[in-house]
Image 1 (cartoon, rainbow, N blue to C red):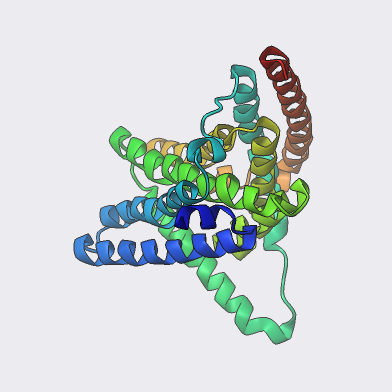
Image 2 (cartoon, rainbow, N blue to C red):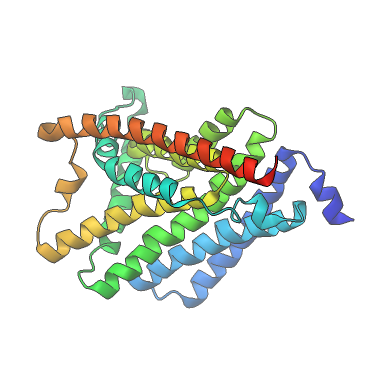
Amino acid sequence: MIKLSIKDLPPLGKILLLTCIMLGCSIIAIVLWGLFSDGSLVSLKWMQVVQSVFVFILPCIICCYLWTDQPWKWLKLTNWPHAWPIILTILLFVCGIPFINLLSYWNEQLRLPAFMADIEAWMQAAEANAGNLTEQFLQDSNYAGLLFNLFIMAISPALSEEIFFRGTLQPLLGEKHHPHIAIWSTAILFSAIHMQFYGFIPRMLLGAVLGYTVYWSKSLWLGIIGHAVNNGMAVISYFAANRLNYNAQFLDQLGTGTTLWLGIVSGICVGALLYALRRSLTISNASSRNSSGN
């Protein structure tokens, strides 16, 4: 009876239910952190996994079981995309790195009005702290450390954040609004929740691209793959920099300054690959409908 009433909740009611369950699971994560953390860098890394599971994955799965009889299908995890869309998605996020760097550079140039100087100082401090923590996480120069970092910083967040944002929140917002509104609203929230204000614009666009890949493909796996590739490229580039003893900041600046042309070319490639991906998925979806007789 309770499950039946939850099924009939409007999207806002489901979002409120999801929020309440996330808060409860967050408390569990905090308790686990207090019990098992020793303050070391390794425990900080494992805390990222605990946070991913308890704050994002577990609440979404619980809610999906409450409001649908086919939770995995509702999350779009039962439809595995074909090889060509996967290849195009990987190329999209690899080729888009200089363009993302260029957008990040432009975003960093934004300044708040003078009367908001205190807020801007807080934003800069938060950005610096996040950057320092990320660099600490990526200091490993051995292959075991690389695999661990790929799991912690690429695979785990790709699964958890895509299940929450593109798998759960985007469809809920799309129940009452146009799909484009749902995609961009989710992308804004996706960027805001990271609390890295000087990367807000590129992360928002990244979220929108992930949203469209899921919307076009009807599969969450393309979003997970794209997200994992995006994060994984950063992990691998820092590993290579540590291994070969060169400045990893060089890779973050690719597409800006003297390599501005590369950022522009990368942006053109992103547009072309998005077009190719959408066309490929449209043909693939049409073929699937024809083969099923619909």
